[in-house]
Amino acid sequence: MGKASLTENSSGPVPQGLPPHLFQAAVEQSPVAISITDLHANILYANPAFHRVTGYDHADVAGHNESLLSDKRTPPQVYHTMWQSLTEQHSWSGILINRRKDGAPYLAELNVAPVLDARGVTTHYLGIHRDVTEIHRLQSRLGNHRRLIESVISAAPMVVALVGEEGDVVLKNPAYLTLMNEMGGIEPAHLILANSDGVMQTFGDREIRIDGRGGVQPRWFVCSATLVHERDEEADTFFAQHGREYLLLVAKEITELKDHQEQMRLNGLRALVSEQEKLGTLRETISAAIFQLQGPLNMLMAATGMELRRRHERHEERSSLLSALNAAVSAGKEAIAVLEGSLPRLAREPLVILNINQVVRDAIGITTERLLAEGIVIDWRPSPVLPPIWGYENQLRAMFKQLIDNAIDALDGEQCPERILTITSEHGDDEVRITIEDSGQGIAEEHLLKVFEPFFTTHRGSEHTGMGLAMAQETVNRHAGVVRLTNRDEGGCRVLVSLPLNVPQMERSVQELS
Ligand code: FAD
Image 1 (cartoon, rainbow, N blue to C red):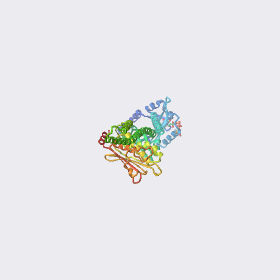
Image 2 (image 1 turned 90 degrees about the vertical axis):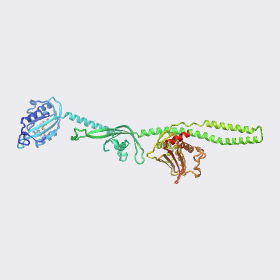
Image 3 (image 1 turned 180 degrees about the vertical axis):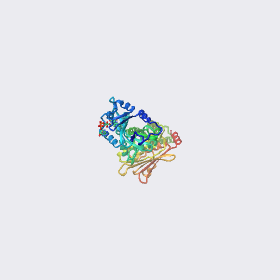
């Protein structure tokens, strides 16, 4: 509102054709409170809306100063500024605390302007005001809510971020900033969205793994995202539904819980593998006993044959030696039969689809304590993408553990100052390959062909029975795969296990073996 004029020939003449009383009617019927005062702010005129807003009728206010409306809680500085503007012939707008006739306070949004005569001299003041108490209440409530939400988000122990359509992170709480700092400045929101196909969509309770740079342990978060639609604030889109989409991301770290769960799972696997190993050891011992018995028994059977031929040539009726030999042979056969009968049966295991990376990772996890105790550095290089294969999970896990145990044994001793175990997984068109390489002493060339023979061991006198690689060979055969052991040029051994992706081949092999 600028300067107002009551005269026709100043700033705004009455447009032709419009009756003069139209302006009075318009002011009278205006829904906002309008008053006209003299230069001391004494009210000369107030329209009906003024009476509705203030509760005072014309008789109550005529001739009274506008200060009649004051609640006396508006700071004097506000009036001072208002009057200064009016004195300089400028309009003024502001909020005052007014009091209705019934004593109820209300907030008045007041616009006041000087009314000038033809010479440009201020003769009156025009006041227009409306009750904005409700608007103020709503704005305050909104502000309070916003402050409450902001303080809750700031104090929240979880990571909260608001991401725009272009991936711009427009809101970050302190927990988010801390995480971002720990991630070396990378936006965690981008990593979370990359795990969710980068699509702006609502999701809930999704477990997301974030891998840190430079071999830092992966961290786990349970994340949820909510699409938030923000209306455009511009005037030109008031009637349109224009706006922007934001994704409100909330992430809570569960790395500790995940680690705990993983430890529990590995403990379970450890117990399972240890049970398998016990059974294996028992089978090995009994098989070794059978093997040991088989030799003398063969000799006894050969001697029985010779004695039988000798008796036949000499036409002897009776031979006490032959009886003794026969008795010894049947006792030996019986002993072998008893031993074979007591061989513990391997538990039947279902053929499942599995990720060999996970199986190898588990085998490493189970042996971690031993690797740490022996001061061995493990360099695990999994192929980022590995096709799934069909297999017997427990048998494969036990086999890889056996191969890792062999490598740890090979790294034992003072001749191995550098103890490195490198495990690699990769795949070709029709196979998955796992290579286990150690930096030990390697195997004497003459032993290379024998290592897969049952009961062959280079650790005589130790607890090794020489069945480990034989059993690994058996497991690989069961998967229609190949296992090869070679010496590395740079020292140490390389064990290569290749397992087929070809399911029919695998199934045929399973049928043949079963
Ligand atoms: P005041 O004695 O009025 O003085 C307050 C300050 O204003 C002092 O610094 C004084 O120097 C200055 N002042 C006062 N009168 C003049 C003047 N004539 N010329 C120059 N300076 C002056 N007040 C409300 O509280 N509510 C309203 O709704 C309201 N509506 C108004 C509408 C119009 C059109 C006008 C012109 C004024 C309005 N006023 C309103 C202001 C009101 O007139 C008082 O100035 C105000 O209420 C303070 O009153 P007071 O008695 O506390 O102090």
